Image (cartoon, rainbow, N blue to C red; front, top):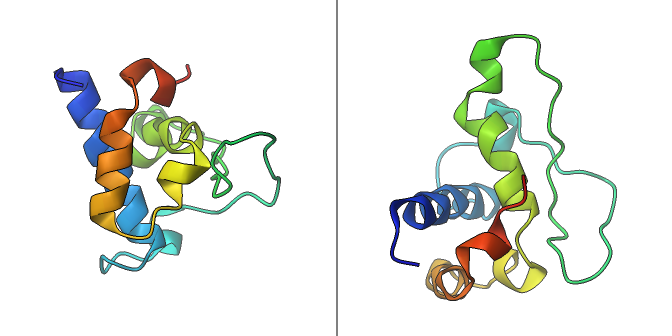
Length: 102
């Protein structure tokens, strides 16, 4: 990965992984993270998040709102890893362009 954008994307995904697996003291509901009830086709992440509607520029530029597309674009094998170290290893093996869709 080697670039700043890739490292930033990895740390963002690490935070979401830890929130969903109860490894940090921040509940998902506290920061408006809501799992989507819609399933995706193929090998994409089954833990997709709903992207809430925004009414202010401040919220549009917030961490949560900006990074939901990155989390949703992960492969299931990465997002549903058993441990943080496995998650990080699988995430770093992906090319940066494969983990972002904008």
